[in-house]
Image: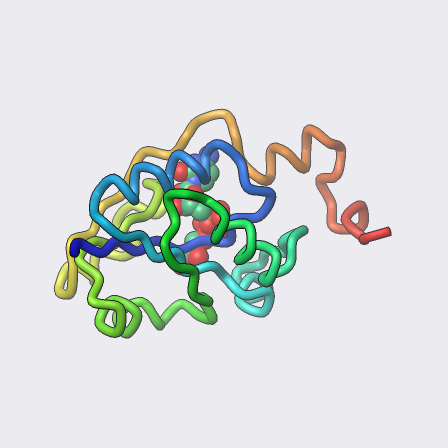
Length: 137
Ligand code: C2G
């Protein structure tokens, strides 16, 4: 079985995320998604609208996704690839080159991002571009 892995926050799931997951899954027989915890998002300078538990729940409902595990930091990827017998590591090409060190452990593929959509754009279009607007009711 050819196993694929990808990483991300996947907040406010949109077509760009789904297309990434679909193309990643098509590269093998099994897709593991490593989704950033809320704590790691803070480290990335991101504050997701949707909690880690809810982002995990949503990802597990997507037909291209076979397994969801937590991403707690930048330096777990080699261990994840080894522990999960991963053959292919996939990311959108905004990350091109950033994870080439994984080539010693698995195939590394950067896929073209889907233009015209992003979580940031959604927030801006909704006029919620700063954190204060995000306080839950
Ligand atoms: N993506 C895409 N097209 C978009 C938006 C996102 O292909 N329009 C891809 C990104 O390139 C990434 C994945 O969807 O591969 C998830 O995007 P984010 O949730 O923004 O992930 P990010 O914050 O980049 O976290 O260790 C890696 C990090 O966890 C990646």
